[in-house]
Length: 242
Image 1: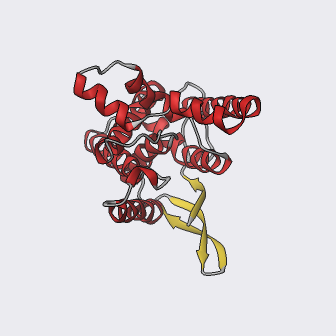
Image 2 (image 1 turned 45 degrees about the vertical axis):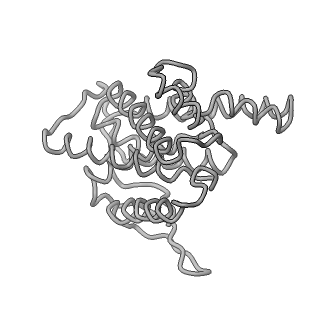
């Protein structure tokens, strides 16, 4: 099941969401340039330098060095991606679901929440595989936090999705509760089954997704219970986005 767009109108232009997408593509362009200049070895060094390496982060935490380069890697890793499919899939999810969350929280709080969600997501994966030397890269942990908020605040929103039925597929409008619930259960099952194996070496940081989604749900519940709503731009946007 692949979401393509939602039918959930926003009140303002999602400047922060678009900015995050643009930043990720800009950094991906830098990755392509590094690869063009030095090949795969140069790109691997680049990702190793700027990604989040669990073993280095664990060592920094043990030393109480919370503002070191390894810890900074959790933030920089949110803007790195491992290939075209990786970045296109992540940016599709951010575009579909991020605009509504930004609209509800407000631009600056949304950016702060996005970074916090990515930080919690990264630390969740570090907690599971503290000795791994494989750098974590990708915005999926932070985006998972966005999905968690959306899941709580708009469970009935209709998501136009590509639904696969064996060798066949069709477009269908599916409630966000099912689309995102299915996504989370898939991450949870994949994460649990990867325990006992080399979790961080599976190629997907499932526990970063799980940690991000859980913190997103927690924030969504607070917003829902308190009725909190961020400020929006003075120029309203009347049509659906995402």
